[in-house]
Length: 329
Ligand SMILES: C=CC(=O)SCCNC(=O)CCNC(=O)[C@H](O)C(C)(C)COP(=O)(O)OP(=O)(O)OC[C@H]1O[C@@H](n2cnc3c(N)ncnc32)[C@H](O)[C@@H]1OP(=O)(O)O
Ligand SMILES: NC(=O)C1=CN([C@@H]2O[C@H](COP(=O)(O)OP(=O)(O)OC[C@H]3O[C@@H](n4cnc5c(N)ncnc54)[C@H](O)[C@@H]3O)[C@@H](O)[C@H]2O)C=CC1
Image (cartoon, rainbow, N blue to C red; front, side):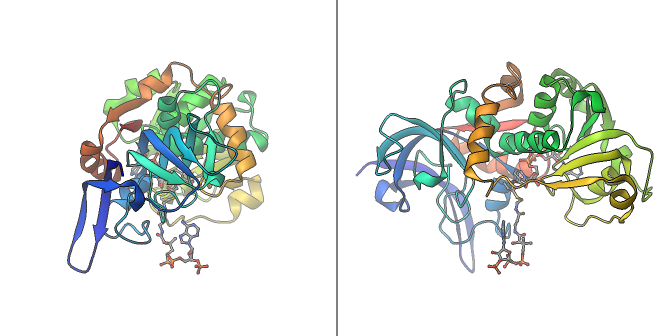
């Protein structure tokens, strides 16, 4: 049987390890479709999966990586055949089912999306779960009435994965994007990917908190959470919406009922993991067409190999990565 390389984590009472190992195909979990992985990508959740107490991985040893894109090698699912190019993200991938940091993956057919026309395997992973989450956020905001005429849209954690894709996507759709970042050195990058204005992290979520504050934005894409989300809620325009997806700024959100009962603010929860397949397929189609920030995906990405994963995974947890990091197999 064929041997292949994968990045594995293992934990026991004394030890935690994270390293590239050689595996055999029969060591992969059950699944209908065997995929030769072309690219995976690095998400914040993968950073959590690669540390001892990240509370993501359910059992060890394990191959993390919540995203993968590649070519079908073998399939017991009639929807897929050898040679098909596919994307597999979310569900149990990289959590309780061996994930994408691997040259091969065996995945249940129900978790797979055919690569849409208009996207390469590489572009699919420049998006990855972070990009899909940005797309779902924009989709939900527009479902709730957002149009470019309504006003400015704030994006927090703007230099990160979800943030960078959201900035580029919104700008492409004609929105005036206000990007929030703690990184002064990245202002040029943010303007390059479409930010019209930049505000500092401190200005957004400083010490001063008022239950209702000056109305500044029609909507927000927020992968940061914590006090940043509290501040957004009190500064959105009347009937504004915030799509909240993340927790890099903390999990506690001190707020009051006032933004909701006096300004009709909508708090939209964004979950990419169990997003229904119908919406998932629709969004991947849109990410390949009207939501695609043509040209900017290349600016947003950088590429690493499996061996470089420990460094990249550790730096995403420190908020130090810029844009999206893809992993070439
Ligand atoms: C790409 C997506 C993302 O990036 S999402 C952000 C990354 N995810 C996280 O940071 C979540 C990590 N998990 C945790 O921190 C904890 O599990 C917890 C805080 C969510 C809950 O911890 P606690 O110790 O209170 O309980 P359990 O872990 O035992 O779980 C309780 C209950 O919730 C269910 N659950 C756990 N994780 C998830 C999840 N990710 N999605 C949906 N549901 C989840 C878990 O199954 C338990 O339910 P039960 O019915 O009792 O089995
Ligand atoms: N709900 C869902 O389905 C999904 C949720 N997420 C979550 O979204 C968040 C972002 O994920 P990625 O973009 O992959 O991570 P990332 O690390 O690429 O981006 C995070 C951004 O947050 C910034 N940041 C870090 N600490 C901060 C703080 N204290 N205050 C303000 N900003 C801070 C970083 O500088 C960076 O720009 C994570 O919490 C992740 O778990 C991501 C994908 C799907």
